[in-house]
Image 1 (spheres, rainbow, N blue to C red):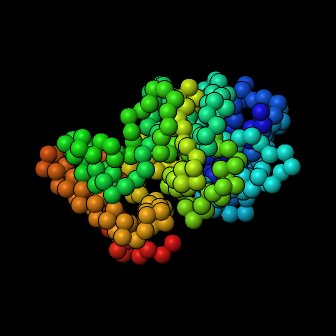
Image 2: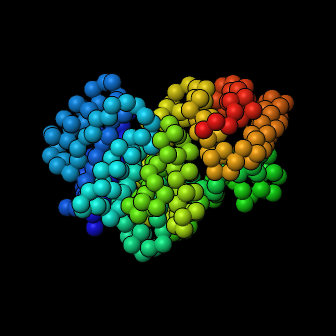
Image 3: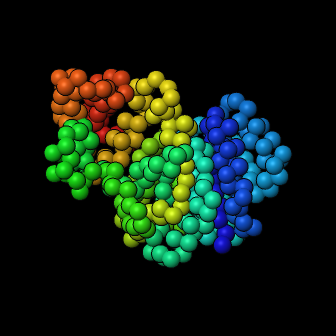
Amino acid sequence: MRLSIIIVNYKTANLTIDCLRSLAPQMQNDWDVVVTDNLSGDDSVECIDRAISQNAWTWAHTMPLERNGGFAYGNNAAIRPLLSAREQPDYILLLNPDTVVRDGAIQALIDYMQANPKVGIAGSRLEDPDGTPQASAFRFHSISSEFERGMRLGIVSKLLAGSVVAQPIPQTDSETDWVAGASMIVRPQVFKDVGVLDERYFMYFEEVDFCLAAQRAGWKIGYAPKSRVVHLVGAASQLSDARKHRKRRPTYWFDSRRRYFVKNHGVLYACAADVAFAIGFAFWRVRRALQRKDDPDPPKMLGDFVRNSIFVRGATL
């Protein structure tokens, strides 16, 4: 079974090398890894190449790119040659550099895909280093899910339980709306049916968009919890790294969110989603202050959201 694994690196050489090290005992004859580098501008490529040479990881190589085009761009740079190759892989695995692959995790994904031929995309169970599971299988974003995400009120979350994006973590193989791109296996035919990842997303929401396109093309999305992968959340993007001070949410996150709603649901739906989140989030901020709850949000989140909403930035894709 031919498998190609793609890891996108951007100034995370040490993480990428640790990920490759976790893959090494599991690699099989027909498996290979390509590490694309989004013009890190440091010594990432040299460090990774050195590790590959010193450890005789003949199954891995680097692909330096000419610019930092984001997650989709970095993956597509490796996906396109694979799709045009004389001998295409049976599966393509997109893997974050901030992951450590547990023993047997890759084979578990392949076994799941082999047993479920109608599934075009499947994700691993992501977890903390101590084994605590992370949300890895999700429902699609909607107006109601945006209101619930902003409001954070127990009774509202119960009433809208079927719309909450992060569904209860499944314990067994299951179908879902979308899976995290940190460890996502894809049949090449899916790319042929819906195209490669949308490079207009710099980072975030590209896997949601891709899974939605695959579903609309008739493919199912699966979750395979026997495939266990440690995900060092935020270590690659530094967006949610708990070891660092909270940072303002970057503009590209808002751009990706706005693009997802406009592209897939239209302008009016995107407007409604923005209003739903803004009302819910404003209510939550008042309630948090009155109840003196801890502040878990990025600084200036409400103001940044409004400034980056469809009402201010428009619907241009």
